[in-house]
Image 1 (tube, helix red, strand yellow):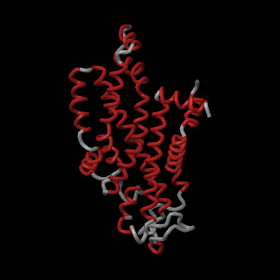
Image 2 (cartoon, one colour; image 1 turned 60 degrees about the horizontal axis):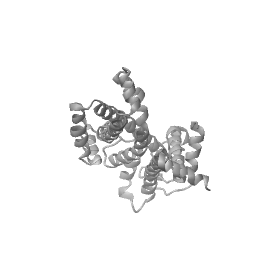
Image 3 (cartoon, one colour; image 1 turned 135 degrees about the horizontal axis):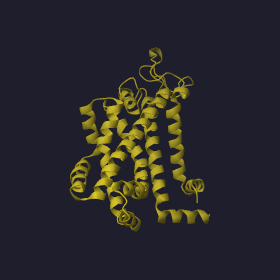
Image 4 (tube, helix red, strand yellow; image 1 turned 45 degrees about the vertical axis):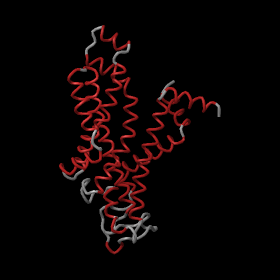
Length: 289
């Protein structure tokens, strides 16, 4: 069965997965097309029209400086998606590299990676570590990404290590080793393709965590620098107008909730689909309808 029918079957089998994928694609479209889709300049101030509730000219109202919230939500999606994708890519590569090498070679290097580094990072709450590193590095989108990569690689490394330990003694790996295949060839051609599925699921759910972490750091003033729009910074700006302009809180909060929920639903659906037993049950259930 090729990729097309498999993807169609996945969409038929999971209603929540369809919703998660649809919202994820919508967020990606908004992030890419924000310069063309946003009706106003997100940084343009118009003080005579400050704190206007949702209306025809400003669909989500304006903030305390008269900036259009609808346009700022669009540009905030760019920041969240950029940070999420960069953090997942960076954390996944670092964690996959260290976890795979530690499990494959074992010995002192595995003890260093697993016992010392991974356990040390996982023993502290991730968001507290991210706040500490972000405060040390300073605000800025690049520094936020670096702080979240530093604190997020350990989960990928633990997952990659467990998968390599399970796979490296299988027959095809032993056969490749007995035929004289190099360590690099075994890792890249035989081990890596067979451990990517759970890592991809972890990456999908990790996108939600990265978006939520970026919003938290921006809310605390440790994220992106003004006037770059960020959902977390918009929530921080809305604290003093919680009762006289609640639309300033509602729409950024809904954006964060929708993004986090979409990636979590998509990750859960992928996990169920890629698990052979759950997948067989879903296929059987789909055939009996």
